[in-house]
Length: 72
Picture 1 (spheres, one colour):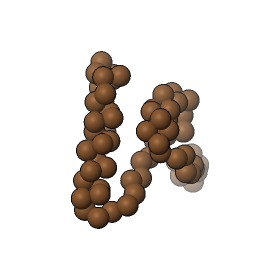
Picture 2 (cartoon, helix red, strand yellow; picture 1 turned 90 degrees about the horizontal axis):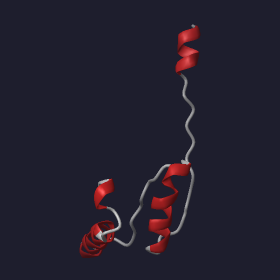
Picture 3 (cartoon, helix red, strand yellow; picture 1 turned 30 degrees about the vertical axis):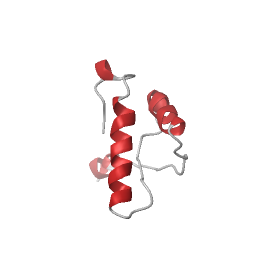
């Protein structure tokens, strides 16, 4: 889910998350997993999730192999 930049800080994101959590509970599930990049420009959204009570859990790693394919 992404809230368009011109509509941020209006509570829309909080409402979306609250509704998602209601659906999760209604469907007898007990967790929500969110993926967000580790880039510096994602700091605001990470703060948003932390403020909602989410816990920072993991990091991911990517290795682009295109340069290896070109050399062969």
